[in-house]
Length: 105
Image (cartoon, rainbow, N blue to C red; front, side, top):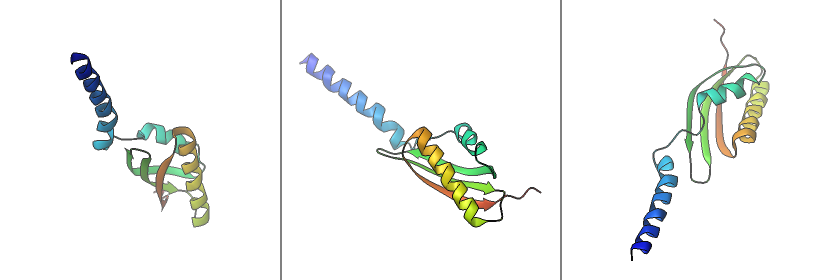
C-alpha cells in the first residue's frame, strides 16, 4: 500500500513540475537572449513589447522590432531572418513580429 502511494505521489509531483510553467504562462525567452539575436541582424535596431510564453507542445513569441530601412519588403525579409534564428537556437515556436520604422531622433 505505501509503495503504491509513493509511486502515485511521485507521478503527481512530476506532472505538476511539467504543468505549472505552462499554467502560469512562464516566459519562454528572456529579453537578453533575444537582444543577442536582434543584434546579429543588420538594420534591426530595437525591439520592445516582448510577450513570450511556454505552451504544452509549442512556444509563443510576439514582439515589435524597429528596422532602419524605408523598404517594407526588406524589413519583412529581415523579420523572417530573426524568426529563423530564434527557431534555430531555441526550437519551434509561433512567432509574430510587428514591423516598425526606426526613428533615430
